[in-house]
Length: 164
Image (cartoon, rainbow, N blue to C red; front, side):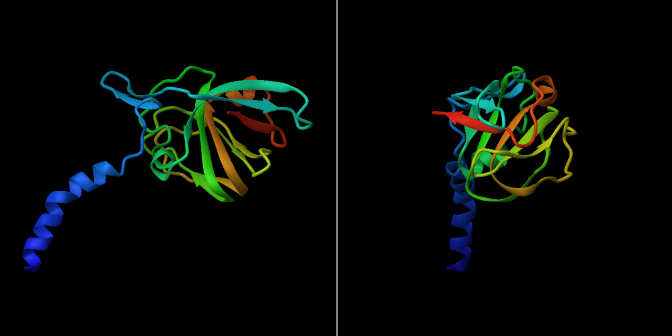
């Protein structure tokens, strides 16, 4: 009897795993020639410390579910310069990202629950398993192409606001 249950579970396991994938086709799709691409559905504005001036705008795909956040920009080989991914977490705490299976060099921007930038890491190393920590509590993360932060002189203390 136990052998039958284990065999049935092994047969169903691939199906159960594939049912748990929350990557929506309208936001992220696989392509044969260039790996994954992202289709932005929202924009974010990066504002000065006093929130009076927009420094930059980024078209973003949202990563809201655990599966979307875990996959992030893995296998994405190219994106427009003003495109990125905006990660939304349920709570604010110290976070850490890595670049495993990510071929692009990125700038990673961590924000707290008040949308204030608390930490920036620039020019990350593709495919690296080195942890890239927020070093402060963060609830949101914005990943953009390497060089974006420098191009727009984005600094800690500025704000990133998601446009709905």
